[in-house]
Image 1 (cartoon, rainbow, N blue to C red):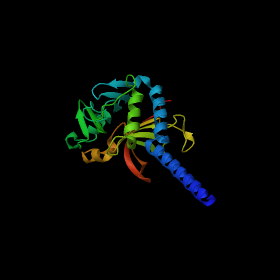
Image 2: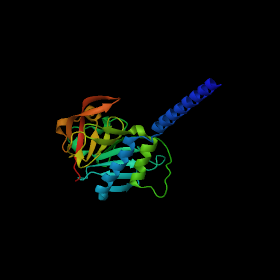
Image 3: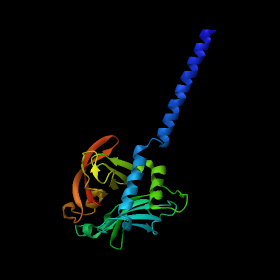
Image 4: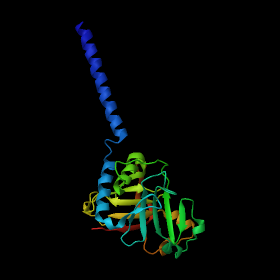
Length: 240
Protein backbone atom coordinates (compact mmCIF):
# COMPACT_ATOMS: atom_id res chain seq x y z
CA UNK A 1 0.00 0.00 0.00
CA UNK A 2 2.84 2.36 0.91
CA UNK A 3 4.54 1.55 -2.39
CA UNK A 4 1.34 2.38 -4.26
CA UNK A 5 1.11 5.71 -2.43
CA UNK A 6 4.71 6.50 -3.38
CA UNK A 7 3.99 5.64 -7.00
CA UNK A 8 0.87 7.80 -7.00
CA UNK A 9 2.75 10.70 -5.38
CA UNK A 10 5.57 10.29 -7.89
CA UNK A 11 3.16 10.33 -10.82
CA UNK A 12 1.40 13.37 -9.37
CA UNK A 13 4.68 15.24 -9.00
CA UNK A 14 5.64 14.38 -12.57
CA UNK A 15 2.29 15.62 -13.87
CA UNK A 16 2.71 18.90 -11.97
CA UNK A 17 6.25 19.31 -13.33
CA UNK A 18 5.05 18.76 -16.90
CA UNK A 19 2.21 21.22 -16.34
CA UNK A 20 4.66 23.86 -15.11
CA UNK A 21 6.86 23.33 -18.18
CA UNK A 22 3.84 23.64 -20.46
CA UNK A 23 2.78 26.88 -18.76
CA UNK A 24 6.28 28.33 -19.13
CA UNK A 25 6.41 27.37 -22.81
CA UNK A 26 2.99 28.89 -23.40
CA UNK A 27 4.10 32.10 -21.72
CA UNK A 28 7.16 32.29 -23.95
CA UNK A 29 5.09 31.62 -27.06
CA UNK A 30 2.47 34.17 -26.07
CA UNK A 31 5.15 36.80 -25.60
CA UNK A 32 5.04 37.15 -21.80
CA UNK A 33 8.80 36.61 -21.76
CA UNK A 34 9.46 38.53 -24.98
CA UNK A 35 12.26 40.82 -23.84
CA UNK A 36 12.98 42.20 -27.32
CA UNK A 37 9.34 43.04 -27.95
CA UNK A 38 8.86 44.74 -24.59
CA UNK A 39 12.14 46.66 -24.63
CA UNK A 40 11.53 47.78 -28.19
CA UNK A 41 8.34 49.48 -26.97
CA UNK A 42 10.15 51.22 -24.11
CA UNK A 43 12.99 52.44 -26.32
CA UNK A 44 10.64 53.51 -29.13
CA UNK A 45 8.68 55.60 -26.64
CA UNK A 46 11.92 57.37 -25.65
CA UNK A 47 12.60 58.20 -29.30
CA UNK A 48 9.07 59.57 -29.74
CA UNK A 49 9.49 61.71 -26.63
CA UNK A 50 12.89 63.00 -27.76
CA UNK A 51 11.61 64.48 -31.04
CA UNK A 52 7.89 65.09 -30.42
CA UNK A 53 7.76 67.83 -33.07
CA UNK A 54 8.75 65.25 -35.70
CA UNK A 55 5.96 62.80 -34.78
CA UNK A 56 2.68 63.57 -36.51
CA UNK A 57 -0.59 61.99 -37.55
CA UNK A 58 -0.62 60.74 -41.14
CA UNK A 59 -4.21 60.67 -42.35
CA UNK A 60 -3.34 59.43 -45.84
CA UNK A 61 -1.80 56.26 -44.44
CA UNK A 62 -4.20 55.94 -41.50
CA UNK A 63 -1.48 56.20 -38.91
CA UNK A 64 1.56 58.10 -37.73
CA UNK A 65 4.89 59.30 -39.04
CA UNK A 66 8.30 60.00 -37.57
CA UNK A 67 10.23 62.44 -39.72
CA UNK A 68 14.02 62.66 -39.88
CA UNK A 69 15.54 65.85 -38.46
CA UNK A 70 16.49 66.98 -41.98
CA UNK A 71 12.99 66.31 -43.35
CA UNK A 72 14.24 64.00 -46.11
CA UNK A 73 12.60 60.75 -44.99
CA UNK A 74 9.76 59.51 -42.79
CA UNK A 75 8.98 56.23 -41.06
CA UNK A 76 5.22 55.67 -41.23
CA UNK A 77 3.20 53.07 -39.34
CA UNK A 78 -0.53 52.52 -39.58
CA UNK A 79 -2.92 52.49 -36.64
CA UNK A 80 -5.59 50.56 -38.57
CA UNK A 81 -4.55 48.03 -41.20
CA UNK A 82 -8.07 47.87 -42.61
CA UNK A 83 -7.72 51.52 -43.67
CA UNK A 84 -4.09 51.87 -44.76
CA UNK A 85 -4.24 52.12 -48.57
CA UNK A 86 -0.90 50.64 -49.63
CA UNK A 87 1.44 49.62 -46.82
CA UNK A 88 1.10 49.24 -43.05
CA UNK A 89 4.74 50.06 -42.27
CA UNK A 90 6.86 52.04 -44.71
CA UNK A 91 9.50 54.64 -45.50
CA UNK A 92 8.70 57.72 -47.55
CA UNK A 93 11.74 59.62 -48.81
CA UNK A 94 12.90 62.29 -51.22
CA UNK A 95 13.39 60.80 -54.68
CA UNK A 96 15.79 63.50 -55.93
CA UNK A 97 19.08 61.99 -54.63
CA UNK A 98 18.26 58.72 -56.37
CA UNK A 99 16.90 60.26 -59.57
CA UNK A 100 20.03 62.41 -59.78
CA UNK A 101 22.08 59.22 -59.42
CA UNK A 102 20.36 57.58 -62.39
CA UNK A 103 17.09 56.15 -61.06
CA UNK A 104 14.40 55.24 -63.58
CA UNK A 105 11.30 55.07 -61.36
CA UNK A 106 9.43 53.00 -63.96
CA UNK A 107 11.81 50.12 -63.23
CA UNK A 108 11.14 49.96 -59.49
CA UNK A 109 9.43 46.81 -58.12
CA UNK A 110 5.82 46.64 -56.91
CA UNK A 111 6.63 47.37 -53.27
CA UNK A 112 7.68 50.87 -54.36
CA UNK A 113 5.46 53.83 -55.15
CA UNK A 114 6.56 57.11 -56.75
CA UNK A 115 4.60 60.36 -56.44
CA UNK A 116 5.15 64.11 -56.13
CA UNK A 117 8.93 63.84 -55.97
CA UNK A 118 8.79 61.16 -53.30
CA UNK A 119 9.41 57.42 -53.14
CA UNK A 120 7.67 55.04 -50.77
CA UNK A 121 8.63 51.47 -49.92
CA UNK A 122 7.03 49.20 -47.36
CA UNK A 123 4.93 46.15 -46.68
CA UNK A 124 1.31 45.26 -45.98
CA UNK A 125 1.17 43.30 -42.72
CA UNK A 126 -2.53 42.48 -42.68
CA UNK A 127 -6.06 43.81 -42.94
CA UNK A 128 -6.86 43.98 -39.22
CA UNK A 129 -9.21 46.62 -37.89
CA UNK A 130 -7.29 47.61 -34.78
CA UNK A 131 -9.00 48.33 -31.47
CA UNK A 132 -7.65 50.57 -28.72
CA UNK A 133 -8.43 51.55 -25.17
CA UNK A 134 -9.16 55.22 -25.75
CA UNK A 135 -7.84 57.13 -28.74
CA UNK A 136 -4.97 55.63 -30.75
CA UNK A 137 -1.54 57.10 -30.08
CA UNK A 138 1.76 56.70 -31.94
CA UNK A 139 3.06 54.35 -29.25
CA UNK A 140 -0.16 52.33 -29.04
CA UNK A 141 -0.08 51.87 -32.82
CA UNK A 142 3.49 50.57 -32.56
CA UNK A 143 2.46 48.22 -29.76
CA UNK A 144 -0.02 46.65 -32.17
CA UNK A 145 2.88 45.62 -34.41
CA UNK A 146 4.61 43.95 -31.47
CA UNK A 147 1.38 42.27 -30.39
CA UNK A 148 0.09 41.06 -33.74
CA UNK A 149 3.13 40.93 -36.04
CA UNK A 150 6.01 40.24 -33.68
CA UNK A 151 8.15 38.72 -36.47
CA UNK A 152 8.40 42.22 -37.97
CA UNK A 153 10.38 43.43 -34.94
CA UNK A 154 14.11 42.84 -34.94
CA UNK A 155 17.13 43.38 -32.70
CA UNK A 156 20.34 44.41 -34.46
CA UNK A 157 23.14 43.34 -32.12
CA UNK A 158 26.06 45.18 -33.73
CA UNK A 159 24.35 48.58 -33.51
CA UNK A 160 22.35 47.75 -30.36
CA UNK A 161 19.20 48.74 -32.22
CA UNK A 162 15.62 47.61 -32.34
CA UNK A 163 13.87 47.87 -35.66
CA UNK A 164 10.81 47.31 -37.80
CA UNK A 165 11.25 45.20 -40.91
CA UNK A 166 9.62 46.93 -43.86
CA UNK A 167 9.97 44.08 -46.33
CA UNK A 168 12.57 43.54 -49.03
CA UNK A 169 15.53 44.26 -46.75
CA UNK A 170 14.33 47.75 -45.79
CA UNK A 171 14.22 48.79 -42.13
CA UNK A 172 13.66 51.54 -39.64
CA UNK A 173 15.90 51.18 -36.58
CA UNK A 174 16.36 53.01 -33.29
CA UNK A 175 18.78 52.73 -30.40
CA UNK A 176 18.04 50.54 -27.42
CA UNK A 177 19.81 53.22 -25.37
CA UNK A 178 20.48 56.61 -26.97
CA UNK A 179 23.37 57.26 -24.57
CA UNK A 180 25.48 54.14 -25.06
CA UNK A 181 25.78 51.16 -27.38
CA UNK A 182 25.57 48.37 -24.81
CA UNK A 183 27.02 45.89 -27.30
CA UNK A 184 30.29 47.83 -27.57
CA UNK A 185 30.11 49.99 -24.42
CA UNK A 186 30.77 53.05 -26.58
CA UNK A 187 28.77 56.22 -27.15
CA UNK A 188 25.66 55.63 -29.23
CA UNK A 189 25.87 58.01 -32.20
CA UNK A 190 23.10 56.47 -34.30
CA UNK A 191 19.88 57.03 -32.39
CA UNK A 192 17.67 56.38 -35.42
CA UNK A 193 18.59 54.92 -38.80
CA UNK A 194 16.56 54.72 -41.99
CA UNK A 195 17.70 51.69 -43.99
CA UNK A 196 17.13 50.90 -47.67
CA UNK A 197 18.03 47.79 -49.61
CA UNK A 198 20.08 49.17 -52.51
CA UNK A 199 19.55 46.23 -54.87
CA UNK A 200 16.21 47.24 -56.44
CA UNK A 201 17.38 50.84 -56.71
CA UNK A 202 20.61 49.79 -58.42
CA UNK A 203 18.61 47.51 -60.73
CA UNK A 204 16.52 50.57 -61.62
CA UNK A 205 19.60 52.51 -62.68
CA UNK A 206 21.01 54.07 -59.50
CA UNK A 207 24.76 54.49 -59.17
CA UNK A 208 25.08 53.93 -55.40
CA UNK A 209 28.28 55.96 -55.10
CA UNK A 210 26.50 59.04 -56.46
CA UNK A 211 23.53 59.12 -54.09
CA UNK A 212 23.83 62.23 -51.95
CA UNK A 213 22.66 62.27 -48.35
CA UNK A 214 22.67 58.49 -47.92
CA UNK A 215 25.66 56.41 -46.88
CA UNK A 216 26.29 53.34 -49.02
CA UNK A 217 28.04 50.87 -46.75
CA UNK A 218 28.26 47.29 -45.62
CA UNK A 219 26.56 46.47 -42.34
CA UNK A 220 26.20 43.20 -40.41
CA UNK A 221 22.69 41.83 -40.84
CA UNK A 222 21.29 38.97 -38.79
CA UNK A 223 18.77 36.54 -40.24
CA UNK A 224 17.86 33.09 -38.94
CA UNK A 225 20.70 33.14 -36.44
CA UNK A 226 23.35 33.94 -39.06
CA UNK A 227 25.22 37.19 -39.61
CA UNK A 228 26.38 38.46 -42.99
CA UNK A 229 27.77 41.78 -44.19
CA UNK A 230 25.50 43.31 -46.82
CA UNK A 231 25.36 46.68 -48.54
CA UNK A 232 22.66 49.13 -47.48
CA UNK A 233 21.74 52.75 -48.01
CA UNK A 234 21.81 54.30 -44.54
CA UNK A 235 20.62 57.61 -43.16
CA UNK A 236 21.51 57.78 -39.44
CA UNK A 237 20.77 60.59 -36.99
CA UNK A 238 22.01 61.39 -33.51
CA UNK A 239 19.11 62.92 -31.58
CA UNK A 240 20.87 63.82 -28.34
